[in-house]
Amino acid sequence: MKKLARKHRAKKSKNLPEMDSKLEQEFYLLLKKHNFPLPKTQHTFTKERKWRLDFAWVMQKIAVEIQGYGPGHTSYQGMHSDYEKHNTALALNWKLYYFMSKDIQEPNDMLTFLSKALDVTFDPIQQEHRWETDVARARQRLHKRANRK
Image (cartoon, rainbow, N blue to C red; front, side, top):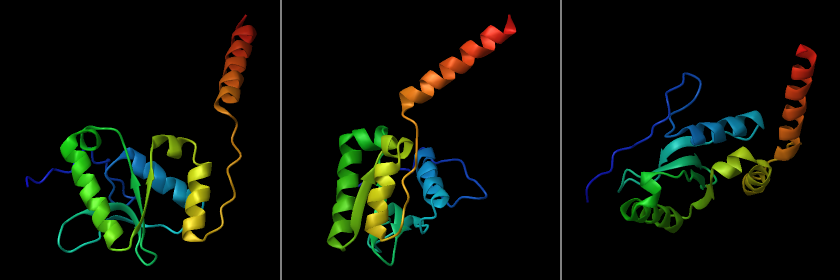
């Protein structure tokens, strides 16, 4: 089988471990911000193949895969390869969880779920609803325009 190149790598940062995407970086930073135990990134979980899990809490055998939307996740070959990797992880007794960009943008449910899986404490983020934020921004713009005159 032809080996697929790692694509869409996130820019290297001195402060962050190796990750493949901006979404993965955002997920990692959310964990850090909310004092979650930090996982190993890009963990190779089997010696037979060079498969890597996006995030792994190795001692608990808990893994998180961040599912983006791109060539590797929409092609038949990419999906088949992902399924093969994930099925192998499950067969090796890993607990595998999937999150997407929406989960990272609105993280309360994701972080609550993950805190239960990792048995850690998490206080939900108090966020305004998106429309409330949009209304507040519109009011600020109107106020600035009114004060210019």
